[in-house]
Image (tube, rainbow, N blue to C red; front, side, top):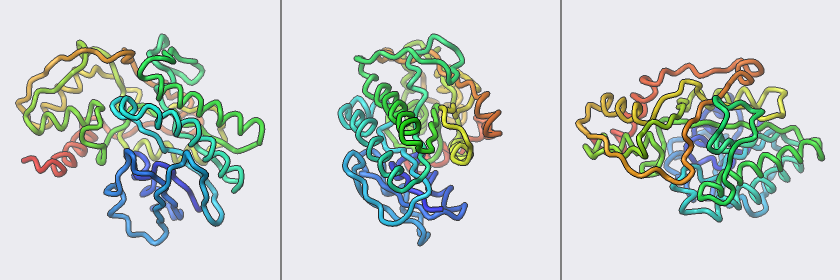
Length: 311
C-alpha cells in the first residue's frame, strides 16, 4: 500500500504514520507545520517514509500511485482555531476539496478525519451518528465545527457524484504522547500545570463531561475503518464519560502533584456533554477502546515529564 497522510506531523497524524509503516505501507506525510511539528517525525528513519512540506489548501501533487488519501490536516484545539480561524476554514473547505480531487485522480480510497465537534453543544446524549448536531455557525467555535461539517458534506458529494470510495471518522477527544504543550486542550494543560506545580485551570464548574480515547486505540480504529465497507460517518472514541473536574483531580493524583484547582470562566459555546455512541464502530469494525484511562494517562504523563524536564 502507498498512503498519503495530510496533517501527518500532527498528534494523531504522526502516530498514524508510524502505525501504517509498521503494517508494511509506504507513507507520504504532508504538512505545512502550522500546528504540526517535525519533531513528531524525527525518530522515523524508515526508507518507505517521505515528508513533504506543503499547504493542502493549494493544489496537491504526489507522483506515482496512491491507494489511500487520509485527510487529517487541520488545527484541532479551541486555542488553535481561535488564533487561526481563516486557516481552519480554508483547510476544512479548500484542503478537503484538493485532497478529494487527488483521491479521485489516483482512484484511491479517501478517509476524512472529522470530529465530534460536528455535534456542537449536543441536545442528544450520548451522540450517535444519526444526530445532526446543535452548532452555532457564527460563534467562535463555528470556524472549526462548520469547516468539518462542510468537509463531511463535500466527502459525501464526491462519494455520491463521482463514486469515490470514502470514509468519515468522527473522532472524539484523543490523548497520548506528542500532544502539544500549550495547545489549550484539557489533558496537556492539566498535565503541564500539575508537573510545574501550578493551579489547574478548570473552566466553569468543571461538571461538563468529556470522553477520552488513548492514541493507540484511536489509530487502530482508523485502520479498521480504512478497510471497512462503510461510507457513512463512524464515531471513534471512548464511551466512558467523566467530568473535567474529575479528570483534573485524577491527573493531580497520578502526577503526585500538590497543585490546587482554579476555576475560570466558561468559554463561549463550550459543550456541556460529550460521549460517543460507538455501536456502529463495534458492529461494523469490531472495534472498541482497550486502554484503561489510568494507564493511558500514566503513559502520557511520563512523556510530558520528559518533555518538560520535570522531576
